[in-house]
Length: 194
Ligand SMILES: [Zn+2]
Image (cartoon, rainbow, N blue to C red):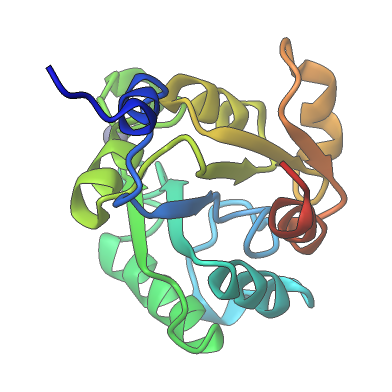
């Protein structure tokens, strides 16, 4: 039998050159400032570095996929429409550079399949956009984000904005990267040498 060795090795490593890479980015405390149960567009604040960070990742061929737990929906603190209005405004402020938002509306005790650190939101994005995980990153300010990355087998980056400083102490296992904020993480991710 004729086998293309390099192709075979790639398959063994779980790589597929057709697949895209993604930056899976947590929303609150990572992409935008942490506000307890952000309900109103007026209270939305991007970090001063958010636009540059997203642009840098896009320029380096990362899809930008927001992966966010929004239990405020099920808690009745805000409606799904309120949340969508916030996502529309984030998208507008970022000049349409976000490829997709995935959210989990459920309560922690509902034991749904989507709430981080479970991986269903990432799996959906992979199916929707033909994303390969080995060159993709999960970036967030919480232990739960890092665990999501471990569970999905992405690379992982903890940012020290939002709850990052406190959450850093809770980590059982080190992420691939700990960075001051999303822009510093993006720089390391895009410019590091393999
Ligand atoms: Zn859910």
